[in-house]
Image (tube, rainbow, N blue to C red; front, top):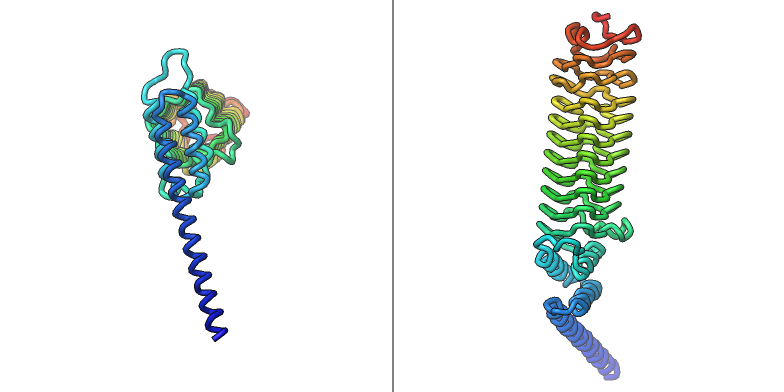
Length: 352
């Protein structure tokens, strides 16, 4: 009987403990619900400090209750889109509450995101300092929907924007130095004057984007699709453009010194290279087929052209003095006669 009594007592104790845990969980859930309701209510207040209190209360709830994380993240994104749907008045900055919501979103713990993806479409966020946090805190922007956003002058250095959609975004003069943009969609984006020093743009889609005057020194553009992009006057020194698609791109006046195009799949056909600086560039294996006027007057001495396809390329007045053309493909006598050569120019077998 003593054994039975002890067993019965243990069962009762376990049941009591389970009931107590359930009651505590229900109490905690009720408290979180009350906190959430109060915080959301504060977002509609007239006073800035009350709205800020609501935003930071939501941040705390996100930290305390992972299950509510995606819901709160959506609330914050909606708050931002609603409050900056129009450009700020002249001379005014992005409101402090919007900046606070943006900071909460871009520094959140993404392991609780589930299916949430940041959606800030069409938001006006010029001059914001999204990148003021450490690089490790900015993974929250990966795969974000930032189409049509206004991010002129925004500081996004070292942010993680891999796979993000920035189509038609205004990124003029933005600081994107060291930013991870691999696989990002930047179709028709305005990046004039942006800083993209050492940015990772591998496999990014930049078709019809305006990159004129941008700082792309040391940028990783391997596999990037830049067809019809405007790179006029941009600085691409030491950039990696292997396997990139530059068909129809405007590279006039750009600095391509020491750029690496070394790849059979690199496409430069139709690109405008007038007045570009190609000193020391590696065009080995690049496809220069049917380039029209793009090489006019460009000095190609020191440019690596091994295996480059020059079929139909217009070399009128191209400066081939001292250039090594011994391993180029499909070069004709007619093309050579229209270019400038000297005794140091090395020609393919059959054309020497």
